[in-house]
Image 1 (cartoon, one colour):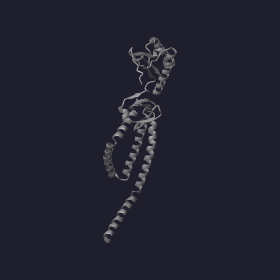
Image 2 (cartoon, one colour):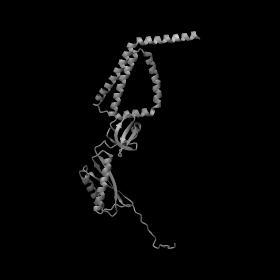
Image 3 (cartoon, one colour):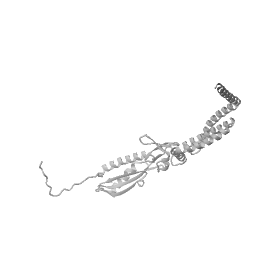
Image 4 (spheres, rainbow, N blue to C red):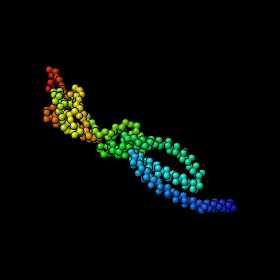
Length: 292
């Protein structure tokens, strides 16, 4: 038993000595590998900054510029790692790592299908010109200002100042209404007047009120006034006009202002805006019982 233990101990000592000899022999290579690794990290940092400066001259969105610069820096680091493996004479280990990385990459890709879909959609959104920072959009039943586009989600600031994070995949697959693609927005206002009203006078009054209340309306011809139908209690009309704004909030404010101005004009001119009423018709002879 003692002989076997002694032999095992001797073999372990010999193995450790061989490892130590290999370490001593490879110390210069290890030092060079450490230097190469540090140089690769520093080079990746400065190359990323240089790539960002060059990309600032392009029309790509900020998120796409960051993505490209990060990819460039990662490539530099990977090149440094491959060089280190060659210096340390670990070519066989490199082949093993690459083979294992393929299997792991396949498993990770299957497990992260949703995340990868959002990443791809984020890259697509970074390229298209229909959405950019500062735009006011409506998509997936949410509306607000685009304040960020990254590889996971589009961030909208809603009118109530709350933030909504919409996955990129939903934004790409859903219809997008962009209020900022034009310099003006149209305000559409519906109302009704009583059947006893002079319809020509109502039209003239509404057009005059709108044209004098908004700077974007230079003359009366810019206001569209249309009677729509004979309603149950009123003759309903619709008026349309443009304002110098690309924000849905400004459209709502302009609509509010138009309602106030039209109501005041109607009150001054004795024009009635009727509300739903119900008329009850009783028979000529109605017996009323007073029994308790």
